[in-house]
Image 1 (cartoon, rainbow, N blue to C red):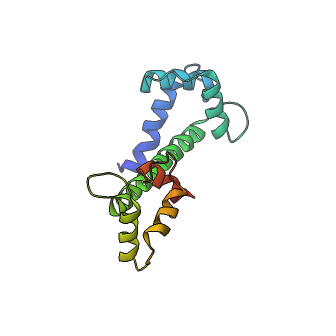
Image 2: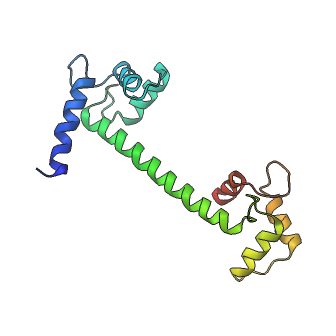
Image 3: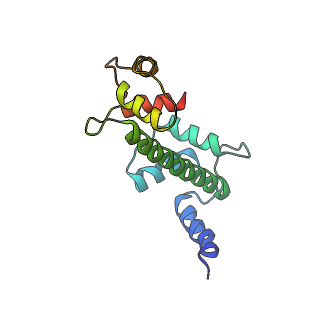
Length: 151
């Protein structure tokens, strides 16, 4: 049998094991118990309620198999997308950063921009960095670079 054909039945078995009262739906309390058992994380009742509400397509306050699958799939896809974006940003950051210092200086920014065909002087690069230099040290850390790229 193909993996795609097996996935729903495997998911159904897992869902049934999580559905402690056997009503075919997961309550926020069942979701909390699942997360505690599977992940070792204690999720507050409010967080579990928010999770259920975010995926509860029919508004009954419970998660069907399809709603839980959509919630898990969306979350995994979003996490993968964010991780891919972060890897790309790290690669770009390394291109601009001073070797061994782990930061972007006005001079390193000037050099990289020149390679890309944009000729700025050091004062202009300093001004560019200043807008996103959250800690005031005159250089951009990766987190500051990430904020800049999100702007």
